[in-house]
Length: 449
Image 1 (cartoon, rainbow, N blue to C red):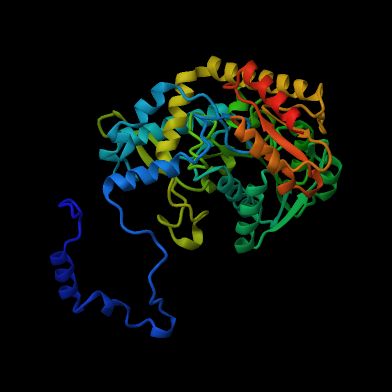
Image 2 (image 1 turned 135 degrees about the horizontal axis):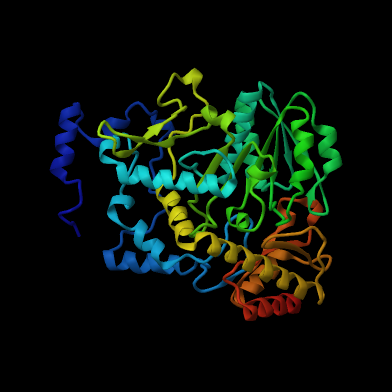
């Protein structure tokens, strides 16, 4: 069945071939040797009608274990948080939903103001002086922080805790290879960074120390104790944070961080089966001109009216490449708007209440787990994630399959990223979980193991 709205007709194809001087589509591939060209039929299904295709796609979609049909206790970087209903209404407005790079400020004031508000919220939340318009995600923001630290200090050694998200550390290693950075990993004790090993590793050649708090295990790092050791050697302190936790914890700027990054997903952004998300990046004032990406600034026009423009664009697309601080050329404007609407809707009191619910409910779940056949290998304070040790020899993948059959999305198998934590599961409990759901989950988990 051919539909008139499909863009390609036989005549269109013939016209385009005539313009470029080709007789057929085959002529476009004559430069590829016949010996290496695939001449068979690709293993694909037969063409489907529109109703058949819709039915097929719905069947594929139904195989996803989403948060609407399953109760999730999986975190490890993406969380099942409450999303206010008003949020989808605002971001679905066409002027936001279809907006692209606001190169022309005179016709992009709404988009620019939305980004400016996001920057302002991030500064207030993190206690930092300047924030950019957003990054692709929290992991790439961390890698950019390492690059900034190296450029600012003229040093090439980066120290990172093994309690930082393993995927973020992989991205850091990939980025470091191209930049010529040396990455030094510091191990953990009781679920937090080994402070003695960290102190011994910091030297006058260290560009930055990268920490995550709450870290990948959900534990809260003693950053106040670490900060003097970092700055004693004139290195920079980089913190990756869960923004929702800042509703309760002291701001990173208040405890001496030089660069603060993180993922805004907990702030009203759906997990969407893995993304996309939105990273944030904030710095102290001395590092302002080295910040990657773009920054929206507030100004006045010739008549004195408030307006917004792109400013401090220290990226390769706008200045000489050799002077650029980053090759990041975009930002997550729509998802940054999600975060802005979330913070505006929740307000300070709402953010504090949500953070407190995360703490109380996760601690209730941990206490319930510890009273049964499960154990807690770490005693460090935690936010909304904690680690449980399952009986020796337990196959966590098999456990999670049985939990899924019971209606639960189970925790993360830590043995996949930390060989020393075989048999340990990382469990996340957010404000959305009820006491009944927590009790049923722990009972089901204990029954399985």
